[in-house]
Length: 55
Image 1 (tube, rainbow, N blue to C red):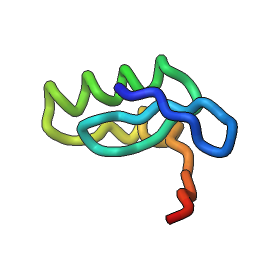
Image 2: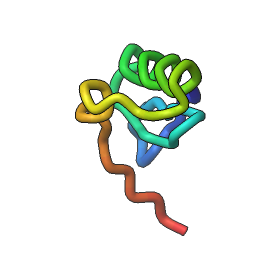
Image 3: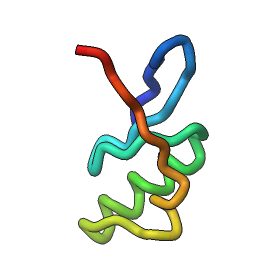
């Protein structure tokens, strides 16, 4: 799980699948599930947020 600052807001990224979350808790749950099952869990990823990064 990686903490990032995007446009002045702290968000958390699952290092396995790349989904972003508002809370550290969901990012950790996502990463743990991804590592264990090598796939995503819809009950976790439904809490993911969209991040628009400027290039």
